[in-house]
Amino acid sequence: MQEDLINENVKRKIRLIGCLLLLEYLVFIISGVSFSYLYGNSFFNLGLDPTSWLFFYSYISQFIASNRWAGILMDSGIIILLLLFIKNPLRNRIAIALFLLLLCYYVTLMGYLTHQNFQIGFVIVMIPFMFKGKKNVSFAFDASRYFLLFFYFSAGFLKLYYYSLSHPEQFSHSLASQFTPYYLEGNTGIRTDLNLYLIHHTKVSYLLYIGSFVVEFITVIGFFTKKFDKWLALILLLFHCCTWLIMDIGAIGQLSFICLLFLSNDFKSL
Amino acid sequence: MQFNSVLKQTFLYRLFVHSKAGFVVVLLILIFYSVTFSKRMGMIFLPYNNMFTVDFAKTNKAFTYAVKINEQLIPITDNLYWKKDFLESSLNTYVEYIDNGHALYLENYLKSRNANNNVFRNLLPQKELATQWPLWFARFAHYSYSMPAKVEILRYIYVFKDGKAVLTDSVSTYLNYFK
Image (cartoon, rainbow over all chains, first blue to last red; front, side):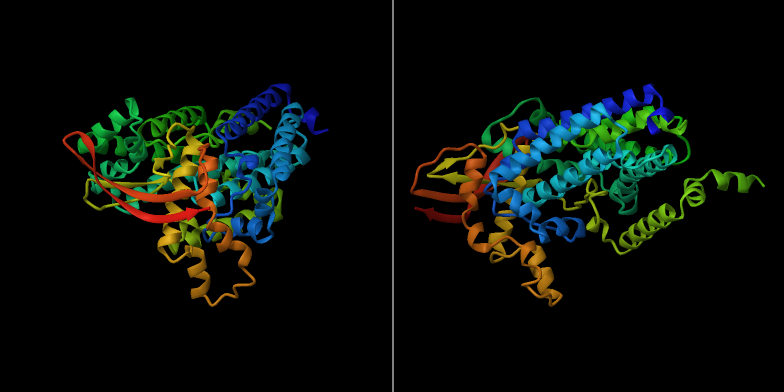
């Protein structure tokens, strides 16, 4: 029934999001940090986030890391579910299962990585598709979209709140610790040259910092209108390219979430 | 009248009309985030503002940690982003764990709250198993080593001046022999 209500064009776009998410998970596997590769790791660090407590308290994460077959099974399960999602993007039970598995992965990875990273987008992206009914999907999409906008807007807002914009040398100092392993190993190139340049030229790095503030703050527009969502998506994708170049912080895991903004008008018409 | 029509177009109003349960869930999330924000506990629920950090120290120094096995440094930067980040971040935390007397922040937090250690034991790594972690690190980095293995973790300190990154000091922070 739901499939009758949502046209093929929208389904095709959701499938593209699914393909992008699949690519992101394949990058996790190729990088060597998926469930299978955590086998034998006995050291993890949790913050005060109760979400991460849940999976570790129930020993789910530790069980997966202690049993190689469990890690392989989880990775295979996620790949299969992603393929099923791409085939049937409106089957909400697949989306619910994916959401739970990807949340488990995110929490487990961050626990063993011992550092919470921002790339939770690959979990949140499933939320709109977990619901049945045109209206429910539309509301869930809007909620996810607001979370995405808030995510970036809050980073810009906090820069303002903590007066970090009035410390021009701050970004140069932050950059000093981003590439030190590369200098130690002699693995230098364009990015390390750029890093050295920005550390030694605080005015240029300050301009870039202001630029990042503008990009983050500009997402406030999305709270008032969906007209510019595609532009916001492009700006955010470009922002993450620059973040990788300048700060060695990759956005794999966040891309499919940002690309939801390209679907704003499609869900608006649901 | 105009205000009413604008109000009726807002997400929360439309959600309230459509689903009271959904409205309550969203409202609870908003209240929770507002409370944690006001108490500067921004990181307590998902990393939504993990992107924001400040460091107003005026210094041109930085440091990094590296593992040496049998005097050979284990390289990590040739890996793709996520693996390189994993190797770098987990090593930093492991050193902090060692420096804090084999205790993590969460353990100290639970102690300060007089929490029952047995109830929360699954939230902390087993200390006996954690002693083997440096060898797991080496295997994870696809580094082959022979036993017995002398494992050392060093802290390398850099100063940035004259357009260069200059290594000024290295300090051994961990040394162990595995047989």
